[in-house]
Image 1 (cartoon, rainbow, N blue to C red):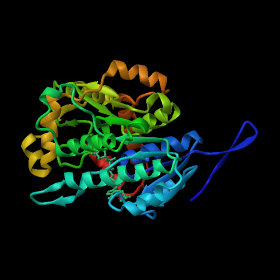
Image 2 (cartoon, rainbow, N blue to C red):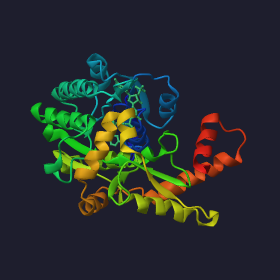
Image 3 (spheres, rainbow, N blue to C red):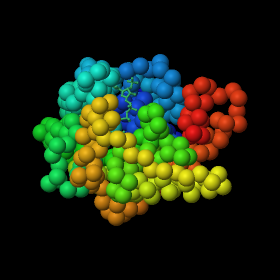
Image 4 (spheres, helix red, strand yellow):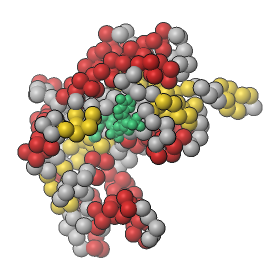
Length: 345
Ligand SMILES: NC(=O)c1ccc[n+]([C@@H]2O[C@H](COP(=O)([O-])OP(=O)(O)OC[C@H]3O[C@@H](n4cnc5c(N)ncnc54)[C@H](OP(=O)(O)O)[C@@H]3O)[C@@H](O)[C@H]2O)c1
């Protein structure tokens, strides 16, 4: 695999190699893009299919090398981690949708987690790897109200425990994101985001912590810049803490001249449980316990790590600009066209 050098102050230096698992996922793309911008790292973007459109797009970025790897196949991970200095590890519970099962399968994610951590340990023993960043999920604000927790949350917390049991805690930073802004772009008919509808899964008055998925990339860039300070730490990360009504109002204020009313619309819990049971359990859990990100503490860490979180307002503004661009061009693809229709409804 590639060894890249950078010219620093007149002398050449080998760039640290950072492996990014699930590189074509929403988180992975955010991490690869952010690290590529720094020009400080050689990025090994790991995916099961190095020829997919998403993979090829990542491969065209500066200092990015595409490497084949499957979290269900330890051998492939071992090859992909060979000679790396740091690893960004992520897992997925999503196995493909089936009637009476949905798409979320806890055991699928657990297996990936065990394979991932075992191979992190192998790489660590080879003495080159010195930092592992695991992307988990936010823990509860009120742990006393924790049960029942969704399976795709407990799987991640169990993987965190496995990191500890494997004696890797000292080289590990656990980042625990809350719900993505990107979930507002769900494909559920009648509940997709538009200028009139702001969809959500919790009560309109509940303070819901959310984050732009690209910000996870900023956090990874941040902790990589100060590894000694942030190893052996777990941080619940969020960018916003707003009620559904406040979120809908944020969008409405961005389109004042159009005289539209943006309503916060809560996806019925029963429908959620029929389509994807674990997501319904998750919505119950969020309302009952609250995500546990400490917004004041996060401000201090963000300053330390040079992270400017994406506000919901800026994220929405960007989406509206993208939508207008789509509108003005006849040559856009069908997918973008559908997306425009969604927002215009
Ligand atoms: N949605 C939220 O609000 C939210 C918030 C916090 C945390 N999370 C968690 O974040 C994680 C990632 O979610 P995401 O939305 O970023 O992912 P995503 O966009 O749904 O992408 C999933 C990716 O996983 C890869 N993949 C699937 N099976 C794999 C395997 N066996 N080995 C390696 N790669 C595999 C696929 O890539 P290839 O086919 O290219 O290999 C696919 O691109 C999940 O665990 C989710 O629970 C989600």
